[in-house]
Image (cartoon, rainbow, N blue to C red; front, side, top):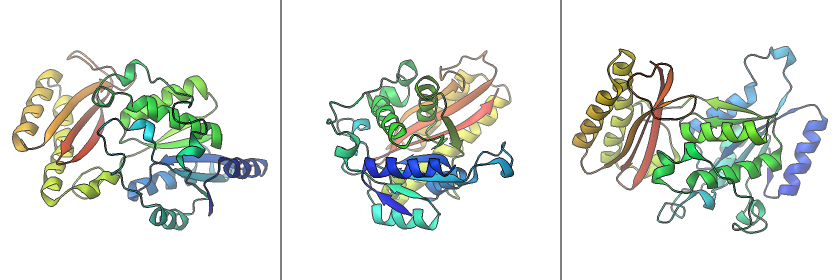
Length: 294
């Protein structure tokens, strides 16, 4: 595995790989890697299932590890966010990654953070995570665009756990990177159903018990919605239940949106939807979601 902190070194390696006829695949991460991240790597290495194996180009898999300051707001956990680069490198080498790109802030934003080519996420970023974390998605898209410009990937892999992020990245890619395929990797879960997250390591035993209620709520609510129960009644009942079960924690939202445009849906909606939840468990913010058809 090659390991770079320099954008110039990354671009040179990408150029060599492309000349050799390989498919450039990027997996952007903030590090503190776990099995969920490794599932993204496996998807990156496997290629597209709809393309016959005999026709697939050999993937050249790049994993970036960069804790992006632009997507953390005032009072958020930028300084606290876990940084485990050497352990990450061992995991990635064992997973057969071609390049680990772990730049410093100055390499990603050579003109300073204020001088970066800032992206605006738009209307779909004003609700849910965007409402609770103003500027978060603008910062996320800014660094993702910068990584796309540096790595020039044919394909990029993102986890479905961050559903709003995935939607916004796909929206930006369709506009600014039309030849790039954004591929979604299914959420990987603990045995309890809790979605794997780098922040899970901050949860106490009591926090973990409270956190498992998030996925349980999603599954129960989805079952009721798919059976035809009114969305507003289902959401309100489960919001009250979550707040009653763990009053010391703080539910941020439990919301149903259309998968097509990320707009909240009404009781008469029919189609592909996503049910999303976010809560602050102890000192840790967790998100999760499930897709459903109603």
